Image (cartoon, rainbow, N blue to C red):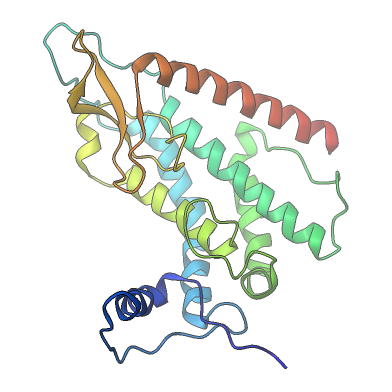
Length: 257
């Protein structure tokens, strides 16, 4: 007999909160949950599919930030050396590489599980000239298998958060990160930084309040649920390590193609 499950998506946030309050305080509620079909509800399937479809244009917008973005202001003590990217467009490039790499991993995971690909036969990364077509191809493949992924992927019933392997959660995380990076917001007052090493989002910024003894600011994550803090040296070491890791990953995938 098929066991009925509640959808793990954000559609049930209010219901989960009400259930938590019921457990802790005994407060009754009349909120009904959205049910999985069999894992996730149709609303979450449709919403995440829209997020997925928007990614090609959003990633182009992220890349264009490095070329067309308004020059950022330096903040803090007069004369202090600001946080300068290791190369022009570093923040946008690192975010794109991370998201596209995760998209390619999800594509390979789905196609291998469905018996369409064999382990080690995934295609390598696209060249810069072919990047848009490469991303479009991944999105088209994910769209074609999205219904299966949302209902039958081994992680389809995992709760939505940035560490989740749930395909819907991953698509929503990529969408939010690209929208946040390209829209007008407070972080435009400082230089763009690499994705956060803890929550993976583009929320890192030069803190206005937290500073070392020498006046140098901490690098802080703007996500209240994350709270990651780094010194400038720790941030530089993290960026170098991430670049090396991405380069090794690209070399490995190309060798396996």
